[in-house]
View (cartoon, one colour):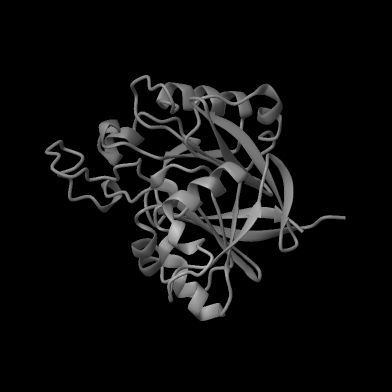
Length: 263
């Protein structure tokens, strides 16, 4: 029989591919002094008993690890191959040195091919001294074990690109989604917490906008939802929050959530 225990999720980043503020942008969001309007690229840290892992490692990975004071990291799960989700993987060298071992990366074979292009120097037959060392573990949609913890990889579509979201117990994390099949939506029922991308209020070809994210939340009916992968075009954090229903919140960098998972 499974029992429920408590895990912790920390938003390492809640921004879109450019982050917020955007370079050289003079919009009110990018000029805001509110820390909640300063968003690194989307990523989360999951802490369970004897297991700490990240979902995605974008260009801000080093800064995120330092800001969150991460001393131990056991694995990284990659949602897809875009640079704002993988570009920080050179910095796993610190964990190579700490653990004296290759670092476990979980991804689809297609994402592995992107890693071999982006970090070709790490995959050479005779690599240069000090390059990152990856232990690639292949994922496809469906359930898998991370150590002894059951996780379900949920397939979503980022225009025509496959992206994996992840369900851990009563929590699910979905980013860079525009469409989700009826079959995969079934895996997102009966959640306490749903984290879903909502770029801004305008229609976008490869991301949910606010209306679409709220429609999905209404369909799935999680107890609580958080919006992430936020563009500066969404507006100021405090102004967006007043537009949201009581059971939906805008995520921000550093926000921490407790959630139940099965063991």
